[in-house]
Length: 124
Image 1: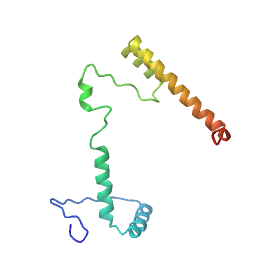
Image 2: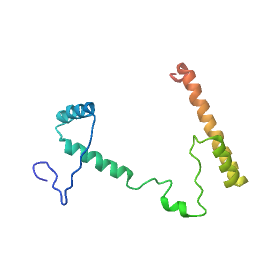
Image 3: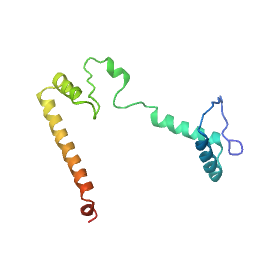
Image 4: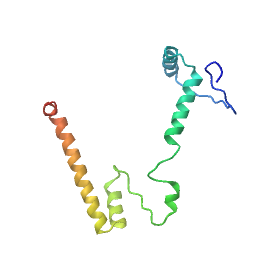
Protein backbone atom coordinates (compact mmCIF):
# COMPACT_ATOMS: atom_id res chain seq x y z
CA UNK A 1 0.00 0.00 0.00
CA UNK A 2 1.12 3.50 -0.80
CA UNK A 3 -0.46 6.29 1.29
CA UNK A 4 -3.56 4.19 1.98
CA UNK A 5 -3.99 3.25 -1.68
CA UNK A 6 -3.93 -0.31 -3.01
CA UNK A 7 -0.96 -1.27 -5.14
CA UNK A 8 -2.03 -3.41 -8.09
CA UNK A 9 0.03 -6.08 -9.81
CA UNK A 10 -1.93 -5.95 -13.05
CA UNK A 11 -4.30 -3.00 -12.81
CA UNK A 12 -7.28 -2.76 -15.13
CA UNK A 13 -9.96 -0.11 -15.21
CA UNK A 14 -13.63 -0.07 -16.15
CA UNK A 15 -16.36 2.48 -16.69
CA UNK A 16 -19.54 2.47 -14.64
CA UNK A 17 -22.69 4.31 -15.61
CA UNK A 18 -24.95 5.80 -12.93
CA UNK A 19 -28.05 7.96 -12.90
CA UNK A 20 -27.43 11.55 -11.80
CA UNK A 21 -29.28 10.96 -8.51
CA UNK A 22 -27.22 7.84 -7.78
CA UNK A 23 -23.96 9.70 -8.39
CA UNK A 24 -25.04 12.58 -6.15
CA UNK A 25 -25.97 10.16 -3.34
CA UNK A 26 -22.69 8.28 -3.81
CA UNK A 27 -20.64 11.48 -3.63
CA UNK A 28 -22.46 12.65 -0.52
CA UNK A 29 -21.77 9.36 1.28
CA UNK A 30 -18.21 8.93 0.06
CA UNK A 31 -17.20 12.40 1.24
CA UNK A 32 -18.64 11.61 4.66
CA UNK A 33 -16.74 8.31 4.76
CA UNK A 34 -13.60 9.76 3.11
CA UNK A 35 -13.49 7.15 0.34
CA UNK A 36 -12.84 7.56 -3.35
CA UNK A 37 -15.26 6.42 -6.02
CA UNK A 38 -12.68 3.84 -7.07
CA UNK A 39 -12.39 2.43 -3.54
CA UNK A 40 -16.16 2.11 -3.25
CA UNK A 41 -16.50 0.53 -6.68
CA UNK A 42 -13.67 -1.91 -6.05
CA UNK A 43 -15.10 -2.91 -2.65
CA UNK A 44 -18.53 -3.50 -4.22
CA UNK A 45 -17.02 -5.69 -6.94
CA UNK A 46 -14.81 -7.65 -4.53
CA UNK A 47 -17.84 -8.26 -2.28
CA UNK A 48 -19.87 -9.36 -5.32
CA UNK A 49 -17.16 -11.81 -6.38
CA UNK A 50 -16.96 -13.29 -2.88
CA UNK A 51 -20.74 -13.69 -2.67
CA UNK A 52 -21.16 -15.26 -6.12
CA UNK A 53 -17.86 -17.03 -6.87
CA UNK A 54 -19.07 -20.46 -5.82
CA UNK A 55 -22.14 -20.20 -8.02
CA UNK A 56 -25.52 -21.58 -7.10
CA UNK A 57 -24.80 -24.37 -4.65
CA UNK A 58 -28.19 -25.90 -5.36
CA UNK A 59 -27.77 -26.42 -9.11
CA UNK A 60 -24.37 -26.76 -10.73
CA UNK A 61 -24.25 -26.72 -14.52
CA UNK A 62 -22.66 -30.16 -14.67
CA UNK A 63 -25.64 -31.63 -12.79
CA UNK A 64 -27.84 -31.04 -15.81
CA UNK A 65 -25.81 -33.59 -17.80
CA UNK A 66 -26.51 -36.29 -15.20
CA UNK A 67 -29.48 -38.36 -16.47
CA UNK A 68 -30.56 -39.00 -12.83
CA UNK A 69 -30.68 -35.31 -11.91
CA UNK A 70 -34.22 -33.93 -11.48
CA UNK A 71 -34.63 -30.22 -10.88
CA UNK A 72 -37.81 -29.34 -9.00
CA UNK A 73 -39.99 -26.49 -10.25
CA UNK A 74 -39.57 -23.13 -8.57
CA UNK A 75 -41.80 -22.67 -5.53
CA UNK A 76 -44.23 -20.32 -7.26
CA UNK A 77 -44.41 -22.30 -10.50
CA UNK A 78 -47.78 -23.06 -12.05
CA UNK A 79 -49.89 -25.90 -10.76
CA UNK A 80 -49.45 -27.68 -14.09
CA UNK A 81 -45.66 -27.68 -13.74
CA UNK A 82 -45.88 -29.06 -10.23
CA UNK A 83 -48.37 -31.75 -11.28
CA UNK A 84 -46.16 -32.82 -14.19
CA UNK A 85 -43.09 -32.92 -11.95
CA UNK A 86 -44.81 -34.99 -9.24
CA UNK A 87 -46.41 -37.35 -11.76
CA UNK A 88 -43.30 -37.93 -13.87
CA UNK A 89 -40.48 -37.70 -11.34
CA UNK A 90 -41.53 -39.14 -8.00
CA UNK A 91 -42.38 -42.47 -6.46
CA UNK A 92 -44.87 -43.07 -3.63
CA UNK A 93 -42.24 -42.59 -0.91
CA UNK A 94 -41.01 -39.29 -2.39
CA UNK A 95 -44.61 -38.09 -2.70
CA UNK A 96 -45.14 -38.84 1.00
CA UNK A 97 -42.12 -36.65 1.76
CA UNK A 98 -43.46 -33.88 -0.45
CA UNK A 99 -46.82 -34.14 1.30
CA UNK A 100 -45.14 -33.69 4.70
CA UNK A 101 -43.25 -30.65 3.46
CA UNK A 102 -46.35 -29.05 1.91
CA UNK A 103 -48.31 -29.66 5.12
CA UNK A 104 -45.58 -27.88 7.08
CA UNK A 105 -45.48 -24.98 4.59
CA UNK A 106 -49.27 -24.66 4.82
CA UNK A 107 -49.01 -24.46 8.62
CA UNK A 108 -46.32 -21.77 8.32
CA UNK A 109 -48.43 -19.74 5.89
CA UNK A 110 -51.49 -20.07 8.13
CA UNK A 111 -49.49 -19.01 11.20
CA UNK A 112 -48.03 -15.93 9.50
CA UNK A 113 -51.44 -14.97 8.10
CA UNK A 114 -52.99 -15.35 11.57
CA UNK A 115 -50.22 -13.21 13.13
CA UNK A 116 -50.77 -10.50 10.53
CA UNK A 117 -54.55 -10.64 11.00
CA UNK A 118 -54.16 -10.46 14.80
CA UNK A 119 -51.23 -8.09 15.46
CA UNK A 120 -52.45 -7.41 19.00
CA UNK A 121 -51.94 -11.06 19.93
CA UNK A 122 -48.32 -11.17 18.77
CA UNK A 123 -47.40 -8.19 21.01
CA UNK A 124 -48.10 -10.19 24.19
